[in-house]
Length: 199
Image (tube, rainbow, N blue to C red; front, side, top):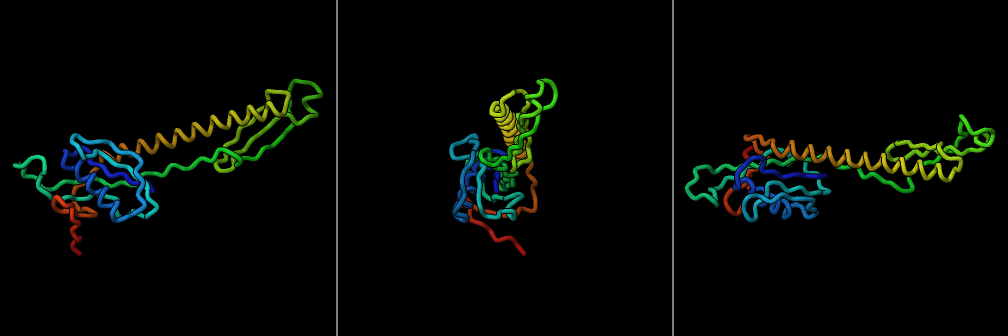
């Protein structure tokens, strides 16, 4: 699954909490793979961090609270800093090779007896996605196959881009959504020590 930790519109303290939470989760779960990160206003701070894991982290979705005096503003009274943890839609792996079925058919229309007797039309079905592309433009079956494959490749590229756009849009929406109150986890102090939730 893909997880995003975000400071939303929060100040640099929230951006620091994003970095600290990611480091804490790396200690807790050993298979985290960093996908992307957006640096914050100060060194070591992050506006958002996106990572992949094989673990089921559904229980982490929500708000994480960090209780700590501001390490950047000494006289600042606020001590509660919130970050958002969101699960993003996984981009489906679109296999593009050797996973299609080819069908041949007779072309209708102009072209005389030759076109009607020989199976020159080609239809290609991409099995993982169900996408279909066909070509009847050429008299050669080989050329029609090449045209159909090119059409199919364009469809697959479009589908891949749509999935990337959907994931980016979801990430942006989640980045701006932080619900304060009822945090799924609470951490305290500059050492970012996890505090047990009250029963």
